[in-house]
Image 1 (cartoon, helix red, strand yellow):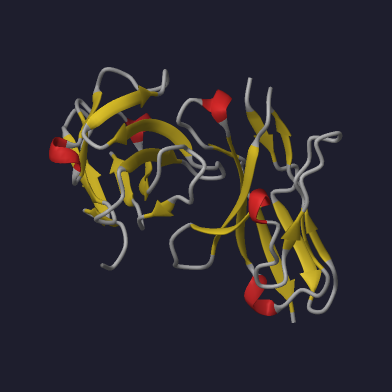
Image 2: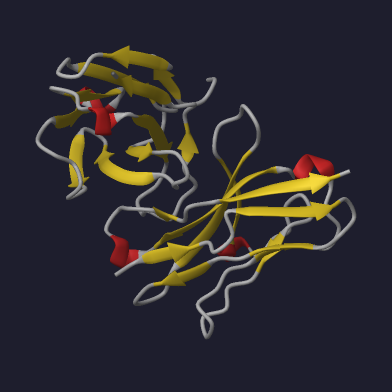
Length: 115
Length: 110
């Protein structure tokens, strides 16, 4: 197991296009998080899964954003009708445990540039 | 509301000098505090958490509930400590979220 894997690492798209990012967590981890990070800021929470259930969504997440985690394994984050303000690094993290106090293991991120 | 504040965006120290990265938080209840680090071209990773009360790579951090602080300290900085450091907060009142500060970029000058 090489840790949390994210694809693609970089995506350049035109405004209005849809993009999808994939995250493969560490295999035994039941918790999966998506974060967004822009320049000069820390990671900002987007959404969280425990197994296949999406238990939490940030109020900052517009309806253009949707995330899934079928069968509690990999997860996808889709952004529809992208806007320039969506340009950011999208980070996935996973953890093991019943509470949200365990260590987060991060992927390398997927960088989105919207032209 | 939960909040993590890291007042210094940039911090430079000479090799061998002490270093302190500041973190203040706002939270109702008993927080869980963490320091995450991102070295150049590496992914974000956990450095230490307050419940472990351990020293990692010579770094320590003490949770001060009176001052709502969780400052990261090291008595003698090394060049390999140059990195981006993020303070993070979690707990029963945060739902399932971890709240991160804006980060401090530490440069250790040889």
